[in-house]
Length: 394
Length: 86
Image (cartoon, rainbow over all chains, first blue to last red; front, side):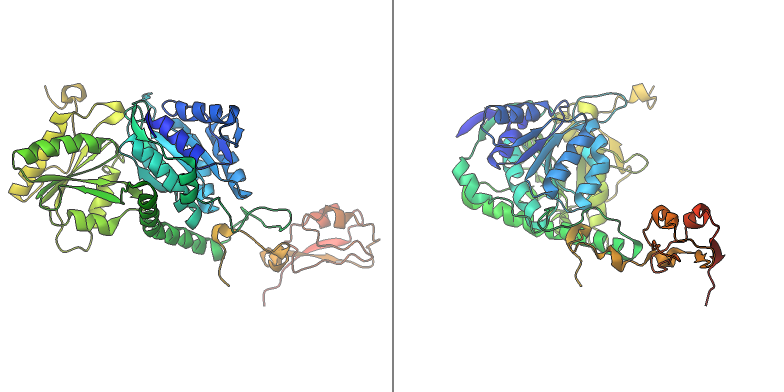
């Protein structure tokens, strides 16, 4: 049934359809609606879950860790400062191999205080051992959240489904909401192999001495690498049931293009509009959208970008003192590859600044210029920066 | 042996396999002539590895050499001595 839903509502409905047993979350802008809807679903009996009210995000994830440890399907949601407050427990969840699913409505980090979108929050915890998916639209939010449970539970890995705050979280779009019976056929109940159970005592969270710790970290990395295949499997299975499919990356008019843009999330939709305009004029430009940021689809990126002369990366994050995370990972993917495209990193859309058609065209022009010249003069650039305000221009 | 995911310990009570005696640099020695068998050392031992007997017997497989027993013994029957390296 098609409904007008914002991204937060789509995520809440997905959690309900997944028949989660425990929800523990602390409301924070712009994720608040996820928590509001889920508490309503529990209160009115639509969802037979335990809704655990907590005093912080650290406790919210801790409660989910406990719930998951005893075998419950656990769900949480957060944004920005909330994700930062959770960060200690993010590593505990992945280290204990608990398949918790979380949605993160991407929001910039304080200071200065900002409630608007960028990817600073999820990028800051990209090494926490959670699968990270980035959604383009609200349909993808719902669908990815459902797929997340399947992937999480098959590999015992927590999954973070990210979507742009406000741009998706608070914008209503038509979303096809699947029926409960069909979701039940797609997603069987969680049957953990290991759990805390007085009938069969076990210990979770014991000390990992140096003789063992490295092996457990290797096993996490191996599971993360296996998640690529598992994401594809879940995506294919999802397509069989619901007719929609996303892939680890999406290629949009990219195969014959010398000049490519690479980005994630809702920005992909804006870029597609611009690509269409260029294509109507006969200009061969294209887009590659990254949906799975962790695990990083290295082979897929090499295959999709390798033929291009230049790639402009558009991203709403920066690793201070280095460059944008998506750029760094993409550049590193081409290490030891014979032919790599030139790359330019465009930091943009920080703290909710609108990335409009002029910005996207500027990035395309810069990539085209680099392709023609065969070199990149300045690797990291800030798109839409008001240079006078930072003293770069009189 | 293949490790279970998440470092979960599935077999209860297997911490007995971990012999913490190797941590010790000094070990408690009980003077049987002075020991009255009062059992205070046994109660104070954080690793429960001293028997409540006369004389008290230390389980060196687990004793970490913290020295609490020697400090608490009211009869000065326990002394901490350097471990001899072989």
